[in-house]
Image (cartoon, rainbow, N blue to C red; front, side):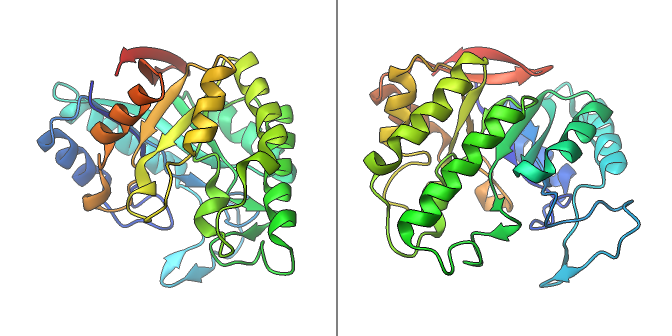
Length: 276
């Protein structure tokens, strides 16, 4: 089973990759299944129908997915390409504690196959701009990141997997914060995830970002398995053609080395297990 479960298109504010082109490229690559997971980040971005002014950054709108057009495009592509590839309906929810009511409402509007829950911002401050880290010590921003994640998973339940769980590493200019210092909080998060039948994502973009470890790290992946976690998805986090499907075979091999034997796809928010 060749599947990519973290894929962005022109419906995300940070991608200009047309959805149909993604499907065509995936078919050419021999992909069996693809799940679109475009960005929604309440607190930072507005809905197109919010009635509020849409701001732009680097020529791209700071706006969430145009939901009606997104769903219609998925419907059309399933009709056109469904005999060659399975296309799943997903989204990446960048949840913060104070935005949970907005995500609850959005989740209830549509039928979903798969939802990635990601922590992209904390207190409406972004990581990639260093706004969140600025004025905090490395200890403070790492602990605050995982504290936000813990509070979100305690309160919000409509998701399939936690995305790129140690994302803060990608934007930590001080280097990688020691895993053991945040392990107790990560373990508490993982226990909730496992108990509630959710999973975590292995995000292959660690390769293109030049990170020294996987995302999440080998230590985190090993801890998840030790705690009894079995639900894993694999996604490229693609935004451009050269990202699509990248490093998925290598990631499967790495997961085998860590003792995993299966990964998951999703249908109707329920995991389907496949041998690695």
